[in-house]
Length: 184
Image (tube, rainbow, N blue to C red):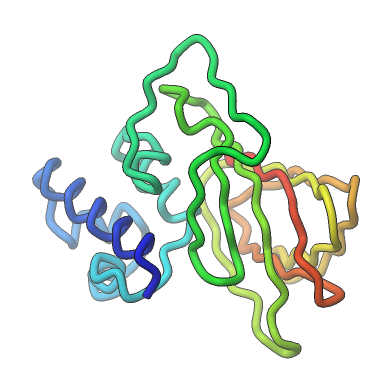
């Protein structure tokens, strides 16, 4: 599995240990079964950003601390230069670049997301998380499956939605799609 996924799993174990909570308590907070949660801690399975966001919100930690291992330090402003920002590739298909990782106590988490195409017929992985989400397509075409609907977004299109609804993304036309995602 990807080294970054393993490091995230290690940070989850560390968070749980620091808070002195059981795997059962963490699983309950994530709305998943204990066995499924424990698989996340192994580093052998993908961990969705939405699930990490839910854990961060529930336990009052920074999402970027779980994803990248860095504690934000800025509280006035934080600049992310073009092409910079901490990156995590959850899978070969999804790459997240944090755009505000150094800003402490954020009310939203902005990411530049690149989704690579999957083979035809590959399923779209659906997830859901508390809050809301805003996506603005920069380049490419994106299939957003949400709550049983297929929505196609092209460069310049945007969507704001209730992220508690099951949703997932897929790059279209055999090309990468790049979009700004803001998780609120």
